[in-house]
Length: 208
Image (cartoon, rainbow, N blue to C red; front, side):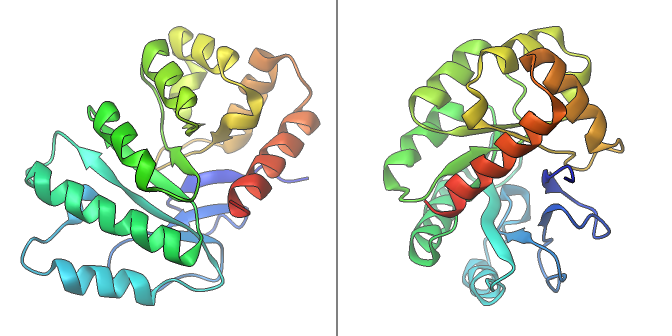
């Protein structure tokens, strides 16, 4: 059984979800499509959303990454409007949402009430309190490379229900197998059990 990479940027990775860049043609592998906060063009928002809708096909597993980012120059209200529109598209096409969030977790949580599909915070590496709040609102957490060396994040992952986690490489240069090995040790389960659980989680979010 292969190692599923929940969020990656490599077209040669067959077993995972490729993050489609704006303006790119979808590959022949599972992918997600969305308007990242940093890519929002306030003068051509409707064109961007139209492109996004046209890219949703059978191979499109999820909407995203999309969300809120306090570090980008785009006005917060515009970010929120585009995020909400993508949540509504997710509701229409019945696909889960991969969420990008930088220092805006409580704002993101406030949008959960609008979503009919599962929401997954990708690249989670914050504090236990934030993890608890997200989990209490039924978010999933996807963990990346930081788990290999952040002890506090390892503790958070240990405390996160295994049916609420995913594992990803994002745009980091390392093997997803390393992450699976570390998480299997942290969770004290076999690699096979972990791989099976991740696939079960995928099935759950795919079916709403």
